[in-house]
Amino acid sequence: MSKINISSHVIDEFKNSLRGQLLLPGSSDYQNARSIWNGMIDRHPALIARCLGVSDVITSVQFAKKQGLTICIKGGGHNIAGLAVCDDGLMIDMSLMRGVWVDATNKTAHAQAGCLLGDVDRETQIHGLATVLGFVSNTGIAGLTLGGGFGYLTRKYGWTTDNVLSMNIVTPEGKLVRASEQENPDLFWGLRGGGGNFGVVTGIEYKLFPVGPEIMGGGIAWNIEDAPKVMEMYHAFTQEAPPELTCAAVLRIAPPAPWLSESVHGKPVIALFVCYAGSLEEGRKIVAPLKNFGMPVGDIIQPRPYLTQQNILDATQPNGRRYYWKSEYMPQLDPGIFTKFMEHGDKLASPHSALILFPIGGALNRLPEDHSAVGNRDARWILNITASWENKEKDDANINWARKAWEDMRGFSTGGTYINFLSEEEGEDRIHAAYGDNYDKLVKIKTKWDPENLFRMNRNIPPRSS
Ligand SMILES: Cc1cc2nc3c(=O)[nH]c(=O)nc-3n(C[C@H](O)[C@H](O)[C@H](O)COP(=O)(O)OP(=O)(O)OC[C@H]3O[C@@H](n4cnc5c(N)ncnc54)[C@H](O)[C@@H]3O)c2cc1C
Figure: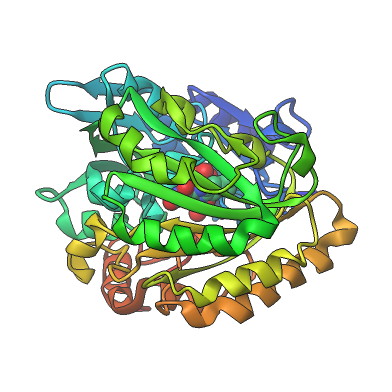
């Protein structure tokens, strides 16, 4: 249980200075507020400030600094390493700040940093607009954007951060500043990939693009026996795919989903999740070779609202299960990886685990490596090995499965890795791998903006000591 060495009078004063709530262990909602997506993480902050606005964020930062408390920041709570929650510190919980303002004329949206992806998609889709967000709608925009961000629109429009116009951030001194190409450009460079290292982001302004509101998308699956042929087809199909098309491959045990034939429930399948973010007419032609291939055991690729495309995978990622991931960027889709997929797909330690390939090549490769902190402009694919299970007793079996699969496939890597997919144990070498040559510039920016490393519950970039 958490310990705290601050008098109740001082805590009461802090509580009364907030517009939002202050939760202590034992308060109703404390358990709910401290819990995050990954059930492996069980930490107890001393205090949780549920901020209702920027002034609450400023007050919280100043309080934590004065009292010498560790700060953690909770956006959507979806970080695999559990970086949203610390023991014995102050959690700045942004989850009540979920406003979104869309300027349809200028195609921009300003979103408060506690938004989930679905919040932004819902508001922008009213106008048939969207920005680049991820595959699961209850992920937080803040963690995703600050680490880079990719999704169904990445091939066409780049990293999420490539489409950020500005951010508002509360610095370690408790000052609100704006970062954009014009204002504090060094900070803006670092925020686009450097995670929560520089302060508490309170709002993000995104560039929007016409998308949908109906797109051609969905999922299609085949028996595992057909996987070698499906993967051969997939390889050829994705080499030719236009940037509007994203087609992710998943090898896993089929859940009892109504769209999958009962004959495969509980058995391994190879599935593709597809989104064509262009005209429906063109989309129909583009996806036809997939729909006509072999004998699918389920096919829900059809015209559908972009919003339903954005939550098609939500049910596979419930809050509170135990999760462990290993991931790499890849420069190309080497057909050699398919054999490895089959091999490790045959040894899954849980029916919820999966091997996943996400194509991301296109727009992001056209910008220089040092355009912003996210880098990795040579990445065209992301391999994610996702172990997911229910019981603690199965931890070793599942973690070992993911590690072995990763050891066996990491040879296909660019050498870079996605900062947002690093599990808890992964250390400094992996943070260096994620940033490559951009690391030194990040240290400079960190040293300028957070010289005392107040913000360190993140993939930390320690400042240079004076
Ligand atoms: C099921 C699932 C699906 C995913 N799919 C994708 C995907 O398709 N594409 C993709 O790019 N990523 C994806 N991710 C990874 C995701 O980008 C990261 O997990 C990200 O950290 C989630 O952001 P969050 O706000 O939910 O995280 P949190 O756990 O709340 O926070 C993560 C980190 O960001 C910091 N942070 C949060 N809010 C702020 C803030 N306001 N200011 C400063 N720092 C802050 C926290 O301190 C912490 O260090 C997925 C993750 C999950 C679990």
